[in-house]
Length: 241
Ligand code: SAH
Ligand code: DHB
Ligand code: MG
Image (cartoon, rainbow, N blue to C red; front, side, top):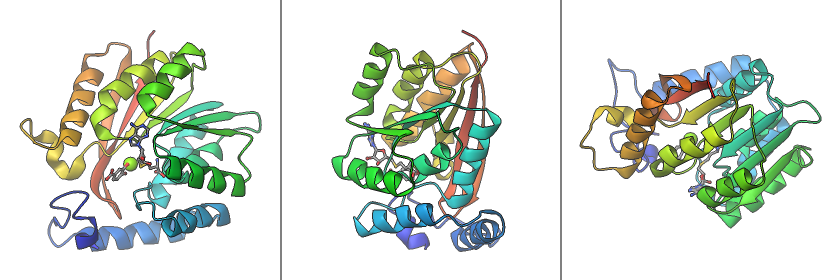
């Protein structure tokens, strides 16, 4: 397993006191088997995505449940997702919404968007979810122009280089009380290296600097280990406007 993910995060084979990706994956499986009720539409979304050759970089099932719980705790009726892939996290989040809720998800790759639309339709969520094809910097601008906001909940999960921009646009599409979550913010611990050469690490670092400097937001980051390696989630609450 470690070798399989080494291309995503150099050093993903990293271990701590014998704890490693294989162990974290086994514990994720245990948690998922124990707590995460199987859902045929979610399973089908993953197999259709794999069959179409999409990379297996969706959130893990227990992380999908976390997103869903956060959206429900938030009482979210409008959700914005940046980075759809095959719609796996999208389905988790859309299942948190009431029947008249709305989710807009942004995806740059035509193949990803089309597989996601099929997966979302199979889950019976096509009336609730809109997949917008195009570079998110463009579709975010469109959403602002259309006055599509404010959203109650935002999940940032597209290209990490652009997280600072995604945060700025998310704020424009937020209100006091909006919850903003970002995936992949610890990057195998590389986030603490100010001189790191990976632009994705630099993107996450600039995202943190923006969060820290933004008086309208209160935020924290939680490190995670699991089947996706060593990474983390940022949770931010818009407390002012
Ligand atoms: N949220 C998904 C995983 C998203 S993976 C899940 O957990 O199931 C990141 C996605 O962002 C990929 O599908 C990639 O094509 C998309 N992406 C990358 N750059 C983008 C951009 N500039 N605009 C919109 N989407 C982008
Ligand atoms: C990648 C993207 C993700 O959103 C993720 O959770 C893991 C990996 C990637 O682009 O490699
Ligand atoms: Mg991610």
